[in-house]
Length: 483
Image 1 (cartoon, rainbow, N blue to C red):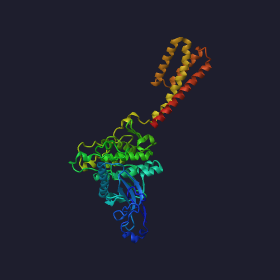
Image 2: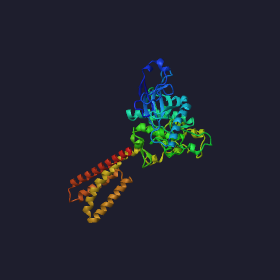
Image 3: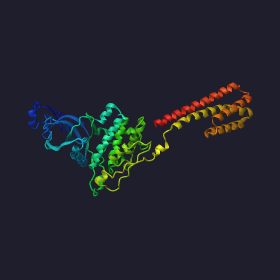
Image 4: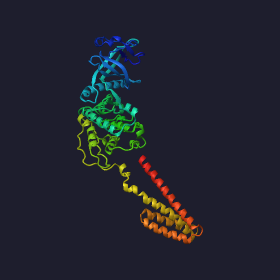
């Protein structure tokens, strides 16, 4: 059997022990040591690391087997191993976060089917590989979830269909409702921390950045503040500022996760820093209005403008769609340090019976109705008449008057015609009558250009105007859909 050495920097971490292939000897074997650095290999006397799963900011994860279970159960062993040059204060904070994850998993992991169970948490003191003294390592052992995280799925499959993302959204809201109910805020929701088991069950992972809300009104403001641990792009403004965090902080990160899964784009590509707006909708063709509106609500920069809890978000999602109206925002959080129950599970408002008025963006750019789309035809007819009439009037006034006077009269007449068309004073019938009168006048008055040539020029100018207006309208509507 191969056992992997967990000492950081070991030059040859693979170790083979043929005697451990015998199940009887495996259960009773004494401690084994790395042949390269002398590190203890059977962690806690029972866990056998066999594969490196990955490395993060504060630790390294190994796939291991528990030799004291009948089936040699697979588990995940996390070793506290902060990366980079940390000072004493930063190291202490990192170790606190690692221990906090163990405390949270022990408290809530066994009580929810979508949170990994904690199996063990222990320190290991071993001699240094070179020289005198000892090294101390901390290990956390938790349930192994066989499958892929959503970041891996996104890389393999590309953007996910809306129905699948909505199922992920609802499932994680239910998990967060439980987590928040326990006085806990996760603070690091992102695709890589949501694992899909091979049986399809979704799990919320990595409680290393978790924030436990202080109980009682006597909690100090510092106990409510964020420690500055977050994933860029997924964390809301209050978390990046190191300010107080709320259940709505996790809802923001979940919404970012969903728009990333829907679009296949990074948060940086979906957020316009210049306008301070999320522009994720331009990357998708359509989305169910209720779901899209709730995502927009959860992406609000101010936590008080988001739903106050996962339960409220679930209720808003379950409401029947009623037109294009927006959802009712949550009330702002209280200014004083709240109690655990008040901070995590505020009093729930009854579901609104009617939706509120559309947001300002919707009022400024209402969706075009069927009637407005049909108004292009009168516009094109008016353009054709204006071009046709303009050429004929130019020739008629040039025959009757000379110089600037002719141009002034022609310009005034054209201005009146355009105004009459815009105000709908000239309808189609009046256009035909006025066109016929002008055509007759041109037939008797125009001497310099043959009448047939003049009519052809007028028709061509009218057709050119129609083509130009039609092209402009098409481009404008395409830009409306894109932007």
